[in-house]
Structures are given as structure tokens and as C-alpha cells.
Image 1: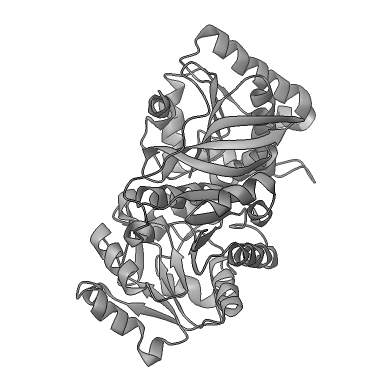
Image 2: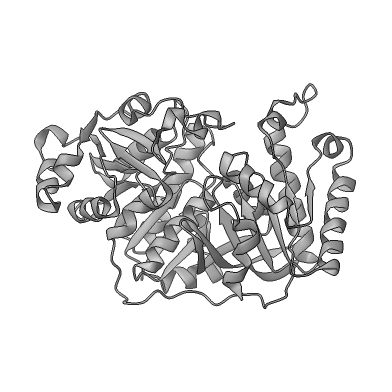
Length: 427
């Protein structure tokens, strides 16, 4: 029975955290939505786990919806036996001025009858660090990083206190790196100080050792919040990682579906275009004839499999920020929604046509693909890069049960060659 329950605000974040927990000795299952904790196959997988991560698509949802689904996830986790909880959000603190990080943290605390928690977005393995309450991305302040151009959650302030204060009813406080470096006992004493009794406490961390210290110092808190890096100190009951076996075999068809506009993913797309067969989404064509355009993309992928099975085709949405500046016709489907729908439809049609390996880039795109494929649980398999892993995904789409190997990549994660090199981890 699981004792640790996590709520992730997007699907890539869920697999990111689950990968960390598996590596630290937790048998971990990702449940797609709260209901997956209690239905048929999902309930059995949850019952056998040490930790459960509920994957939501709440990062950019309206505040009320994000709070409601997060509370439903918390209640499902408590019903499954979990006693300690982890609210996982992106290490770049993706949110709007209204939320959703602050409102969800407030709601979870209220539901648990607690009054304070920590805020720890640091993840040094992916270049995210916090010092003096300021968030840095590969050494650049958040406001100077490519995240300032994010189409859904542009991040134009590096100060976590200023970002969080408008979102929460709790005071926001900071515990600095000097206190963290004094060790877990000193840090726990600082966190337990009366003046922090009802606060959201931003904690500095710039190294993996810092995160291990923070994790040890917060072991008594019912709820922690942060990126996946905070799991570095959450040692599980098993000495070895229990990884799922692949659903596919070498030579099975694969595809890359990229909806992300991040600078990291654009560089990955540029690299892959030199090595893989590729096709870019034509938004105008999708608006004129969605079904026919998607059918053309599926036919392209199938031809690519026939030509060279060792080179998975790439279907992508963005290779230049100018792609995001194209104005949609009046009352037309927004570009972001059209991209998600097109790539999700490609995914279901390609799985029906024999695809058994899918690498998906972008949090919103990943959520759309997982939902379209009817996936209920993800069993964590072989890691690809920090924050990115293969997972055995079982679901039902177009009237058929299926099992596929699925990698959900946050737009900002992975090295330049990930689209061409990820497949070797399944060999």
C-alpha cells in the first residue's frame, strides 16, 4: 500500500517525479487523473506501489478547475492509504499572476488541516537553482532566460516571493542558503520557528546536497511542494530501482510528436531535422481540412517506417518563435489547442497503425496525447535524460487495448540530440 502521494500539475512533471522516486527505491505508479487510483487496473497498480503520482493537466487550467482537480487527487490518494503528500510543479515555477501554484498549495493545506509548507523549485540536474529567493535557469535569472517568452506562462520575474505573494493567502517567507548549509537539524529548527508557522517558505538550494538537506529537514511536514529535485532525499523501502520492462521490441515503429515552443525543444527539432524524416504542422491546412491533413501526416509517418524503421519520423509544431505570432482567423481554434488536438489525433491513429514507441515533447501536448490514448497508468522504465524517462503505458483507444513505450518530455528538458538518441535506451 502506498504511503507517499504526489500531485503533479502536468504529465511530463508526473513522470519526472516518478523517475526520481523509482531511482530512490520507491515502487512508483503514475495514475492519469484521480479516478485512475480506484478503477480496475489502476487500483491494482496503486495498491502494489510505495508511491503514487497523480498526473493532472492543471498547470494552465482556470484556477477553480486546477484547485478542484488537485483536491480530487488528494482525496483519492488519501483513500489509497497515502499519509504524506508532495505537490509537484515545474522547476521554472510556470504560473500566471493568479496561479495556479499558490491557490493549489493553499487548498491542499486547508484540506489537510495544515498551515505551512515549503516551496522548493530547485533542480540542479536540469540547471534550476534558487539563491536569495531568486530562481536561476542555467545561471541566468528566470526573467532573462528563454522562459520569459513562454506562450502560456511567460516568466518575467525571478523573485519567488513576488511571484507567489499575489497567488496565496499565506505569508511568503524565505530561508536562505546559509541556514541550509548548517544542516538538516538547523534547517528544521528554522522552519519550525513561530514566525513561519502559517507561511509558504521558499527555501534556497543550489546543489543536490542542499536538496537532500531540505528533504531531511521537512520529513515531519505532511505536505511539501517543489520540483522533482526535492525527491533526492526521499529514500524508499527498496535498495534497487524497480523499472518496468518495455512494451515494445527493437525495430517496432516509433514517432516523435513535438508541440513545445521552448528554446530547448526548438534546438532539438533543428537537430532532428538533419537526421530524421520530418513534417511540420500546417495550421492553416488543419483549419481548412483537419481530418484530411492529419491523415496526410499519418501516411507520411507510415511511409517513413517502411523506408527506414531505424529512423522514427518527427511531426512538430514550432521551429521558430515567429510561428507563434501568426494570427488566427476570427473565432478560429487557438493555435495551441489546434496543435494539441492534431498531435493527439496523430498519436491515436499511429498507435492503431502499429506505433509502439512514442516520444512526446511539451507538457500540454503530453497531456493531450495521454488523454487521447486512454492511458490510465504509467509504469516507469529506463531513464533517457534528467527529468525524462521511458514508461510502459497501457490504455484503450479506438476500441482497442494497447501497450506502448511512451516518453513525455518537458519542453525545457533533454540535450540537443534527444530525439535521435532516446531510442537506444529501449534496445
